[in-house]
Amino acid sequence: MRAAVGALRSRPAVGTAAAVSLVVLLGTGSPAYADETTGGDQTTTQPDTGSGQSETDSGAESGSGSIGAHIRLNQSTSPSSRSAATATATSADPDWEPPVCWYEPMYTPEEYEEFIKGAYGGAPGGSPAEGYAQKREKEKYHKGDEGLWWQVQFPDETYDRACPVTTENWEIWVPPADPQPDPNKVTPEVLSQLAFNSTKLPTPPVELRPRADRLLVNLGTRVAFEGDLDRVWTTASLDYKGVQLAATTVATPVALKVDAGTADADPRSCTYDLVKGKDGYTADSEDAGCNVTYLRASGDGTYPFKASITWQVTWTDSADPDGPPRQPGLPDGLSTFEQDVTVKEAQAVNRASGVNRG
Image (cartoon, rainbow, N blue to C red):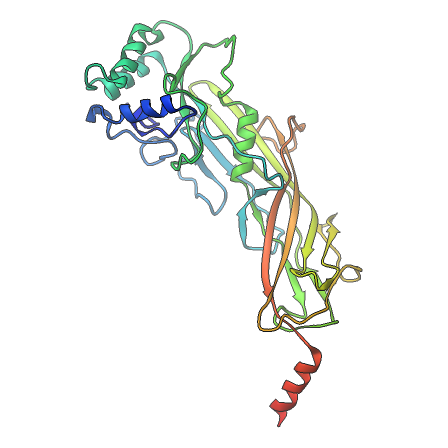
């Protein structure tokens, strides 16, 4: 059996200098584990979900795919939205971060013995890799015990943030009744965070009237909402070796905020509430008092007009988006549309028109 996560030599930095040194030392070991794959590599390890789910997920276009070793992602579509463009949701809370790593169930005791011997069997004597293998051998791989070995996983292969798991415990033994669950074990809450971080949201379906290259000083600019938005939900699920967990994040559009891109506008920014109608959530901006009026021409440059949708995000501890919301909550999500606009003086436009007629 090949490892679904790379041998210790390929691990990212962890919290202390000593741990980092251990990772480096493990890199000097035997080539017996030089071809092991790293977290998120779906070309070498396919999940055994046991649920008959297709292994040919379409990837980023639909929001479906995989993360870690056996976590499956599936996102709903928004058929009523006229906005074809989508982008990964950003958090309205700049301090929020998704999990940097977590433990997933990976091996039975017999499979773990095979993994350790195959990955570290050729490590040089006295090396940290050999010490790690000996440690597991002394534990007899928990053969004969009920439970599974769980292994650390990562969201991708960048490893740009420190993982709190120590290099002494890239795998942990988890019995059926876990008396003291490791704080890094995957849970529905962790799955909800991974689902949120993978959610793709439609960009705001807005259109400027007049259009972006024909705006005039002191002429009101309507921000037309051209479409209806549905809720978007993403399910992250784990179904492997008898461990079944799921969480679904649900993003509901609640507000449209527009920013003129300059203080020389009235108003500089304003917010429209999104209201649920027959075909989804929409904003009626036709008679709104906060349509933008630019007070100064953009000259030889442009103004960075921006529109963003705020999405209220909740999560359930199942694959059902309509299940009861759970705590702790998730931050709001944002999807953004940006466009450079050109604003001219009306007199300059008239003079230019007169020259053209001549």
